[in-house]
Amino acid sequence: MHYRSREVVQVRSAYDCDVLVIGGGIVGLSTAYAVTRAAPGTRVTVLEKEQGPARHQTGRNSGVIHSGVYYRPGSLKARYAVRGAAEMIKFCAEYDIPHAVTGKLIVATEKAELPRLHALVQRGRENGIPVRELGPAQIAEAEPEVRGLAAIHVGTTGVCDYVAVARQLAEASGADIRYGADVVRIDRRPDLGAAVRTADGTIVRGRVLVNCAGLHCDETARLTGDDPGMRIVPFRGEYFTLARPELVRGLVYPVPDPAGSHFERRIRSFQPRRSRVTTGQGEALQRLWPKWGLDIDGQRTLDLAELFGADLPVVLEIGFGMGEATAQMAAEDQETGILAVDVHTPGQGNLLGLAERSGLNNIRVANGDAIILLREMLPPASLNGLRVYFPDPWPKKRHHKRRLIQPEFLDLAATRLKPGALVHCATDWEPYAEQMLEVLSAHRDFENTLPDGGFAPRPEFRPLTRFEGQGLDKGHVVNDLLFRRVQHRDQHAPDA
Ligand SMILES: Cc1cc2nc3c(=O)[nH]c(=O)nc-3n(C[C@H](O)[C@H](O)[C@H](O)COP(=O)(O)OP(=O)(O)OC[C@H]3O[C@@H](n4cnc5c(N)ncnc54)[C@H](O)[C@@H]3O)c2cc1C
Image (cartoon, rainbow, N blue to C red):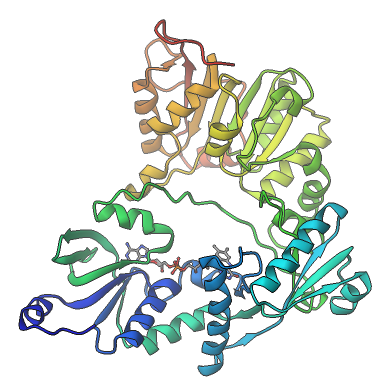
């Protein structure tokens, strides 16, 4: 960056820095590094809300240096990944950061996967990546504990310590990096750059603002007054640690599924595991998922009669925890199908196991985003009920918009519920209960089943779980809400 005229120099001095970066993860820190390398002398400030770098995704990821083998040749992603992998390895070597180019094996275990595996060979080679094809004997040679019909070995994939990378980027950038600086306000003026305020009241002015706030970048964009047209929806994932790491030499992957959803599950099928998913849950997942599991891929409309193998009224339950209440309710009313959705893998395994042990055939377990399930996969007026028990309360004020029960969610749910369908919510977080009551009462498509309005007593059919019992013992207040989907005279019945 060069400042030629006095005028520009004067304007520059009004700023605390030239480039102001929000976020001290790898994207923010590498931005700072790249800017100071490309234009020495540029004053860069990075504001990071945590007390150190890489405390979020960057410090909690799998540490893989991806080769770019999956990306369409010539695409920006492919070029970035291939060049980025090489640069990352060079960076690690230059600064003595722990890393290893292990290569990775992509293994096909079923015939149906072979065409996709071969397409990857082609793709990898077009991207200039060294790819070798392996038969069963060569797989065993490369990874003695892995079995497969065929595999490919991708030579440039590696692993590294991304926390060390982030620290090094911070240091080598020469930027002014301020930790504990949580950006809470942004004032952006055309031609005048941006002024941001942090939670402790400090104002920092920059000529250019770069939003690298990771999973908060949508919120940060909104602080500038922009509508990013998207919302980041957090999911909880489960990760497994090999009890015997010596079982694998490098990285082992399945052939990617176009829907993307079986990827993890298949990997689990040949990884011994300990930790949060118990053996019983893992075994139930592996055995029962093909029968009773559903991956939410947004790709098809479900036929609920086909899914349940019978024409049952179906209730959608969003978020079932460990599934005890779900299994109990399914046992007590076997004439109703429960489509139970969650992203919590141990809970999914637990519920599948409970269903099998109780001889229940009226539970289906869906993995993924309930909104996509509702919007993309469920036909209009297909549900006889909706249950939301103890949803994430998102207690911090600025996260309230992430709460599930919002007017927009009710708009969508109303289209999928049959007239008369019951919406049953319960929460032990009182401010959320108040919010639910407010938005449900205000929505024209729902009416409170209690003639006088307000919260309902816990209905008999919702069992008291151990978790809830413990909460009640501690003095928590649990509020139930029972609303009904109403059909207005001016509304046509949704197309079934
Ligand atoms: C489970 C998992 C595994 C992954 N595995 C790999 C892998 O093996 N290889 C790979 O290449 N990629 C992997 N990724 C992806 C990779 O980790 C991310 O793409 C990358 O870390 C994103 O970096 P970031 O800087 O955008 O985000 P983050 O690392 O999340 O950094 C964003 C930063 O912004 C800060 N911030 C947010 N809001 C504010 C605010 N208002 N004020 C100040 N600071 C703020 C946060 O505190 C945070 O430090 C994985 C991701 C996940 C979640």
